[in-house]
Length: 251
Image (cartoon, rainbow, N blue to C red):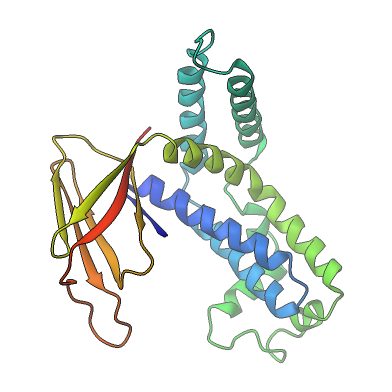
C-alpha cells in the first residue's frame, strides 16, 4: 500500500513540510560522506526558511494548550488509561516548555552565522559551492565525519523544539480520524461535505494500481481524480474503478 497525505490548510501544509525536512536532515546527518553532509546543511537552510513564519511557534503553543485541556478532561474516564494519558500530557508539557524557552525566529542562530549565510547565498547559484568559490567550506567537507556531524547537530539543536511540538500535533491529528473504504468509479470520486471541514486527508492506495490521486476539497465537496502514473506523457484520468481507504482528520 502507498500512503498519501493531503493538507487542507496552510498551517498543516507547513507542519508536514517541516516534518519531512527534519526526517531527511536526520538521515543525511547520520551519514559519513561529505556530500551527504552538504545535503544535510541545505536541509537546515530549508527548515529555517519554511519555519520562519512569525506565528508558527505561537500556533504550536496554542494548539498544544488546547489539546492539553481536552485531554485533561478525560481523567477518571474508565475507558482511558491514566498512565498513558499522563504520559501524553507530560510530553505536551515538555514540548511547550521547550518552545517557550526558545527565543527568536527558527534558525536565527544560522542567520547570525556569517560563514553559514555565505554558503547559503552561494548555494542558490547553480554550481556555486565549488571548492574555488568556497575554499573554507571545501576544507570543512574534508574534516573527519564526526567533526562535521557534531557541527550539523549543533546547528540543528536550536530548531528541535519546533520539531517536538509539531510531532505531537501531527500525531494527534492523524489519530483523530476514522478510516473509510471507497471506490472511485472510472477514476472519479465525489462526496458532499455538508459543511464539515477536515484539516488533513489520509489515503491508502494499492501500490499495484498505476495511478496517483489528485484532490480538491472545500467545506461543500470533496473531489478526487485518479490520474495515470505515466512519467513520459501527460497524465490522464484512469479508465477503471479504483478502491482506496480514506481518513478525514481534524482537531
